[in-house]
Image 1 (cartoon, rainbow over the protein chains, first blue to last red):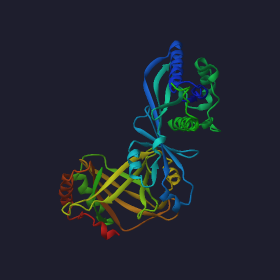
Image 2 (image 1 turned 45 degrees about the vertical axis):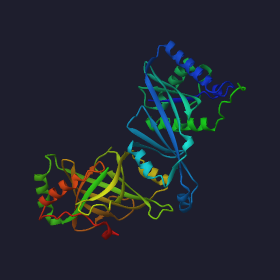
Image 3 (image 1 turned 135 degrees about the vertical axis):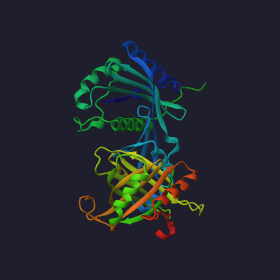
Image 4 (image 1 turned 30 degrees about the horizontal axis):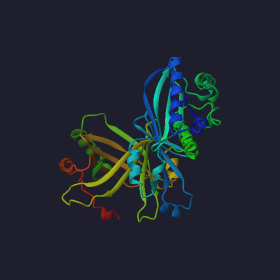
Length: 217
Length: 191
C-alpha cells in the first residue's frame, strides 16, 4: 500500500469568494476520476488535534515545548495515531483518547487548531483515491488527494506506477516523492507513514494564509 | 473502567497446591503462563504527584501488541467494599511505546519481569506470578527473584458503578482459603 498526498496550494490561494474555489476544484477532480472509470466507495475522514506541553511541565523538564498530534483515520476506525514532528508515530487503540483526557494537566489541546479532511473514496482497479476538503472550523483551507496502490507494500517498487496514475488526473499538479520515505525506500509501508504525510500536509495548510474574500458585497 | 483488586502472596513451596485448586475452580481453559517485562514511567509536573503510566510487553509471545496502562488513585469510598477500586485505562500500542513516552517527557522509574500463571473465572482474572528484579537496566536476561513468594492477584475490570462485582470476588477468595487469604490492601500501608 502506498498512499500519496497532494495539496492544491496554488488553487486554494486564488482570490475568489472564500470556500467556493475549493469546492469547484474538488468537483473537477472527482469528475475526472469518474471519467477515468473510478467508482465511488463511501466517504473518508482524517482528523488531527494538536497538543502542547503544559507550562507547568515545561519548567521541571527543562525542554522546549513540543507539539504532539493525535490523529484518526476512518480507514482504521479502531486506531488512534499519536505523533511528534520528526519523531516517533505511536499506533494505539482508541482508548488513547481517554488517556489524553486524563493527561490534560500535562498536555493541553490547542483548541482552534483542530483540522480535518473529509471527502469521497474512489476505487479504480488496484488504486484507492481519496479526495478531501481540508477544513479548520467552518472554513475550507485546501484539498487533499490520497492515492493508494493496494498490491504493493514497498515504496520504491511502485513509485513510477503511482506517478503515472497521478498524472492521468492531476496533470501538471503532480508532485514529487513524499519526504516521509527519505532513505527508507525499501521499507515496508505502514499506516503510520500515511499519518505522517497527513500531519505534514495539515501543518503546511495551517501556515498558509486563509483564502481572502474578494471585495465587499 | 474500574478494576477491583485483592492481593496476597504464597510461598514457593505452596504454589503447586494453589495452582491445582485454581485449575479446579476456574474456567476450563488451557493453563496459560506468561513472561512479561513491565516498565513504569513517570511524568513530573508542578502537580504534587507525578503521572504514572505502566508499559508492558510480552517476552514470550512474538508480535503481541504492547500494553499501556493508567491506574488512578484508589477510591476511598465504601469501607465495606472488599476490594481496592481504581479507575483504569488500558491501551494496546505499537512497539515504539517507550520511545514515544520518552518523547512525551516521561522517564522510566523502574522495571521488572513478571513470570506466572493466568486463570479466568467469568470476568474475574486470577494471576499467580513472581517478580524478578532486573540487575542491569534494559537486560531482561539477567534477573533475580525479588522474594521466595508468588504474588496472587484477583482482579476484575468492570464499568464504573458496578459494586456487586466485589461480592463475587469475596466469595471466590473464600474458596482459596486456607491456601491463601486474599484481602483488600489498605493503600495507606503502602505509602
